[in-house]
Length: 90
Image (cartoon, rainbow, N blue to C red):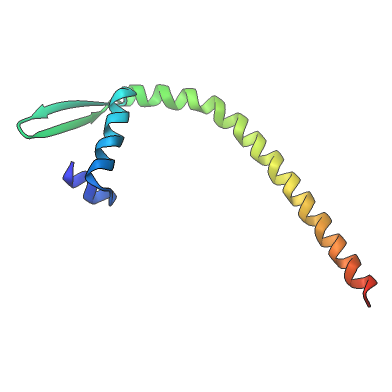
């Protein structure tokens, strides 16, 4: 795990915590080898999780697009008000 922590620029406790969560979620398997532990990705489980998340991605994409439209409309309205204020102050 020292190598993983170095590559990701993460502390040892943080790497351990992430690996524990991934193991509990079934995304990785761990095999103890002497003083080391070898982690293997379970791609099928990762694909299942990705498929499950895809449904929510679609929902959030729609909501973020709607929010972006609302923010854009509010900014445009604010610019319009600002132009009117400047024109009125002349």
